[in-house]
Amino acid sequence: MTQTYIIAGACFAGGFILALIIYLVIYARVKKELKSTRGYLESEKLMKETLKKENLTLYNLRQANEADLIKKLQEAQALNIKLDEDILLLQKSNEETEHQLQITQPELNAIKLKLIEAQNTIARYKGQSGK
Image: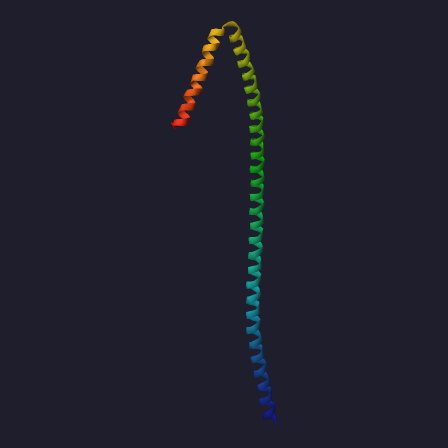
């Protein structure tokens, strides 16, 4: 009977050691997979933060470019208004000069008008001939 107890004890101890080895192998594998998963999650978090920073930088750059373009557009519109005003003043000045010339020197004014008509005719002929 002692021999039976010894064999039963040895089988129990062998089974316990075998179960412990199986448990440790499975535990090591699960621990390795958990570590790998945590590393992957950390990597994804860092990538997400990097992309957030890049998106914020690009958004700020776009906003700055848009503000700069709006400023340039406003400057161009102001310049157009100024140029329109200058053109109107120049036209008025030309009309006044033309009127003065017509009053003081009508012959010179008539020759000038004929010269302008001749230039316009030449321009029309050039346009029609395709030059």
